[in-house]
Length: 213
Image 1: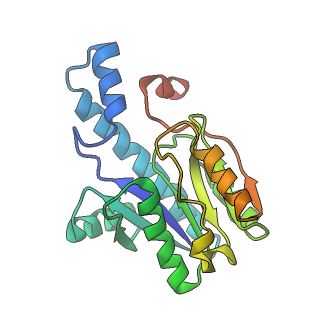
Image 2 (image 1 turned 30 degrees about the vertical axis):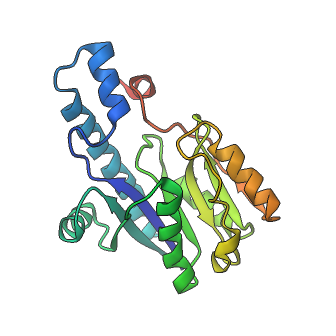
């Protein structure tokens, strides 16, 4: 059994996709840019949940929704709506802290873990299946993103038992060297690491253009 954690922010206008909101306003002159950005985030989150739920039909995984921007009851209701009944809060802190918090659930249950975000229009079941299969023979699996970060983080059976070796400390979260710094930390701890397909996170208006009909 493996847990797949979907890291999701509640798509509230003005509190999600702020860079996309700014682009919609400045580049296109859209007056309701925050509402449009929130609708885009809603669609992306539903797409991510659908991919994970489809995977749960064919593989032994436990899907988890890790929520930011809602309290426990509202987060639970949202998870039910998305078909992801296992719901946790992300909690406070920078991304590395929130990732570690989710991985600790895997540590306590001795359960390998994948963590993905909800900014991936190209996300598909084959990419995630490949990551799971690769994780069976590696300590760490990463899905590179075009912005220098990564869209997927996988921690294997041996590494999940050794939090002191998780390559999450000293990473400049939100910068262009997140992948590079994570790989350097993995090398320091002599972890076997594999990369899967490179994908593009959706942060700016230009990121939307390849998917517009």
